[in-house]
Length: 406
Image (cartoon, rainbow, N blue to C red; front, side, top):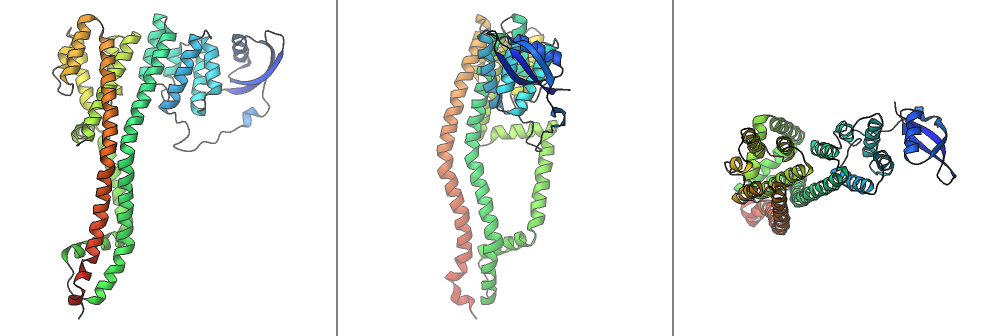
C-alpha cells in the first residue's frame, strides 16, 4: 500500500536536504532518491500518514481532462529529451502536476516501472488518463529506442486533439445556452404569466381566438402536470441514452448526426480530422498498420467510420491497399482517397495523412467561425419569435375586448 515517507539526504555538494515521498516501501524511496542523485541518510514513515483520508466528491474525483494529459505529455517529452532518467521524469511529473488524480496515476505508473514494468505497460494500467493510442505510441517508441521523439510527437498529437475538442465545444456552447434560455422563458411564462391572463379572460367571457385557446391549454397542462412532465422528460432522456448505447441505436444516431443541417458537415469533417491525425501519428511512431487501424477505429467517434475502417482492416489482411477499400465508402471524400493512394505509392502514408488532417483541421476551424457568426443572429430571431408569438397570442383578445364584454 502506498504511504508517505519523510527522508533526509545529502546532495552532491554535501548539503542536507529533507522532504517527503509517496511509495510502497523504504527500499523504493531509497532507490528513487539515488536516481535523483542524492545519498540517503534516513528514511521513515511519516507520522499519522496512515490515518489520512482523502475527501472525494462523486462524479468529480478521479477525473482527468485531456488538456491535463496534453500539458503533462509536453513536459514529459521535454524532460526525457533533456537527458533526465525515466524514473526521475515521472517523479517530477507526479509531484508538480496540478491535477491530483493525474498525479496519483503518474506515481502509480512510476512505481510499476520501479518494479520492472515497461513504461507502456505501466501507463496501460491507468486507462482513465492514458488511451490506447497513447499506450501504443509509447510502446512503439520503447521498441524502436526513440521514446524521446515519440513523446514529442505524442504531445503534439494530444494537443491537437484537445484543440479540436475545444473548437467543437465552442461551436456548440452558444446554441445550447440559447436553447436552455428559451426553455426557461417558455416554462416561466406558461406557469406564471399565462394563468394571470386566463383568469382575466374568464371574467370577460366570450370565445377566445384559436391561438389564445391553444396557449391557455398548453399553460394548463404545464402548470398542472409540471412535475410529471419533468419526470417524463427525464425518463425519455434516460431511455434515449440507453438506446444510443445499443449497436443499432448507436448506428442510427451516428447516421442521423451526419445528416443534421449545418452541424452534420462539421461532425463529418471532425471525424475525418481525427481519422487522419490519429492514423498518421500511429504510423509515424512505428505502430503496425493493423494495430493502427484498430486504435483509430476506437478514437474516430462514429460507427459509420468504424465500419469503413473495419473493412479496411479486412482488405489489408487480404493484401489490398488502404486506398482501394477506402474508395468504396462515400464518407471518405475523393481527395482523401487520392492522397492516401499517392502516399502508398511513394511510401509516405503518414505524411499524406498528416496533410489531410491539417486540411480538415482548418476546415473545421473555418466552419466553427462561420457557424458562430450565423447562429448568433439566427438564434436571437428564434428566441424573439417564440416569445413574441406567445405575447401576441395573449394580447389578441384585447384587440376585440368590446365583443368579449357582456
